[in-house]
Image (cartoon, rainbow, N blue to C red; front, side, top):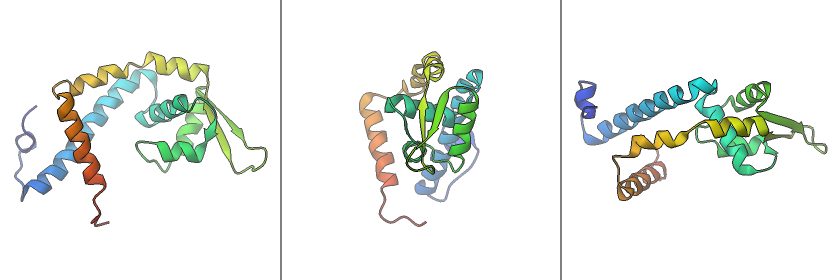
Length: 152
C-alpha cells in the first residue's frame, strides 16, 4: 500500500486534516478486512463484538451493559442481538422483577462459533509494528479521543 496521499491521489491543507482523513481511511480498510473475516460465519463485526462481550461476561448480563461495552456503538444493538438469538447463538431472558430489563447470555453454540473464528489472523495486519510502536499508537488514539476541546 502506498503513502495515504498518493493512494487517494490528493493533497491536504495541513497534516491535521491529512491525519483525520487517513484515520478514517484506515478504519474503513480494517472494517473491510473484518467483513471478509466474518463473512464465512454469517455474522457482522458488531455481532462478533456482542458474542465476545458475552463470552467475557461468563454470565447473563443486561442488554444495556452489552451496549455500553460495544467497541462500535450501535443504535440497532437490540436488533443485532435479535439476529444472534434467531441464529441460536445467544439466549435472552426477561428480568422477573422488572419486565423492562432483558438479560442476554452466550450459549454453547455461540461459544463454538467464537472458537472457530481465528481473530489471531487479524493480528498479522499489525506485524509491521513493534510492541513499542503499537503502544505509542494506542496512546495517541487515546489522546485523540480524550481531547478536552472537542468541537461537537
